[in-house]
Image (cartoon, rainbow, N blue to C red):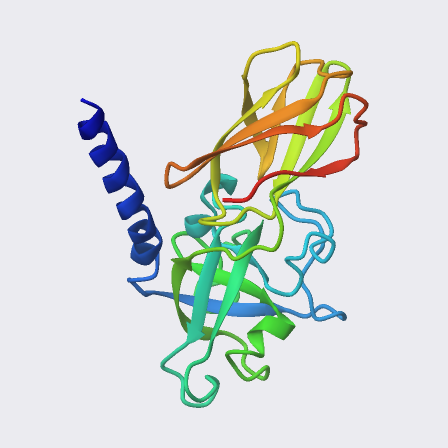
Length: 251
């Protein structure tokens, strides 16, 4: 029996890298534009709830996604590799690629045609990039360019970051800097006097519960969209305060 269990564990570990390889195999077609911000970035507040994108290290390599890609916020934090294709005037030679993190929602504009202005109208697949990132794959003079994209692994520096907020009757945590596939589908929190408490997605990568955890060190368990679970014990000390950010393990 022990030998059988060992074989099963080995096979699971053997197949795990293939999950990332599969993410890089298929290119899909979409379009891309850029947001004209003075600092070369995109908006610092968005539908994923990340706040200042530079402070959490996403910065200029961030993107707003159309409804088809945003999936009601579940893809917040996911990473996409993009390249400009099929446009001899606008695409840079050699079709260089850029890796972006999903940080915002690009809303539809049904008052405009999906071919001109309504880039994010359903069911279009579209990326709104920063001006700086756009310039790495295309001439900035372009209005909109055809691109190919694929999901790719998120390479992060340091561990997952947990920013807590709320009050005595409401607990919320924003999770950023997620590696691997970058997309979380389940989060649990545990105090020193509680069991594991499942959190509900509030919006983007904000997760919440009506629970009072003050005075207890906090542990977190997160599950990614490809089924990997990571547990960070005693991330926050017993004297943690709302507004603080703590660092846990990384996938």
